[in-house]
Image 1 (cartoon, rainbow, N blue to C red):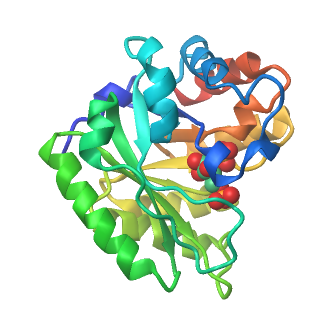
Image 2 (tube, rainbow, N blue to C red):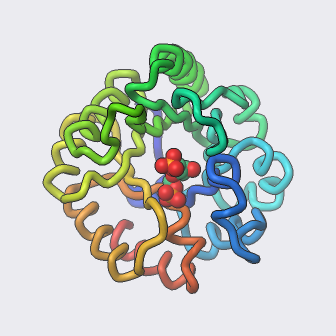
Length: 246
Ligand code: FBP
């Protein structure tokens, strides 16, 4: 098992996700959060245990924050513009991520996509390489195909299990709708830790209730983006979440 302590606190994870500029585009942003410096500062001040970005932001902005907060680099990425089968190509390798200061790497697998086999194979190499450097590999395990209901709890548990079987140290899954469903997904992930994504922005009270349900299920924590940096008072929300998760 590779150590997770560089990107966690008290054995829990609170990752600030900021790969949406590539995945969704500037429609997610306002006049503050379009700026990576704003996000890194939020990450530091809000006591997140790591920030997640793609390589471009890592190279241009992370040098100023390198000793203030750990970085997780997402190794693949795609836009929301294409209409083909779900597939996110590799845009950075493990060596490059480490040279940019990453303490862990992430990779999205779209389960059920016609290109699933290729993603499995690439993730296999990533896990192998990350482990040879003793750093964690995180799998964004997202079921995605026309025929699949990506919010179905059984499918989300399957995704968590697949991440474990493929050697992920941490899997990132969507909240499957209840504490019980999440408990089942977490059981199936075995010794692989489970973090939950935030999803599109919701009311702060709803987010806090969901966070309590997530931690009641003994999740490892959150990898959350829009529900922090799209909020009117992100630091207040971060502080509330921090109290629940860590
Ligand atoms: P959010 O907390 O903003 O949902 O971010 C989590 C995340 O996994 C991001 O890392 C990623 O960019 C995004 O969700 C992908 O969401 P989707 O593919 O469902 O649009």
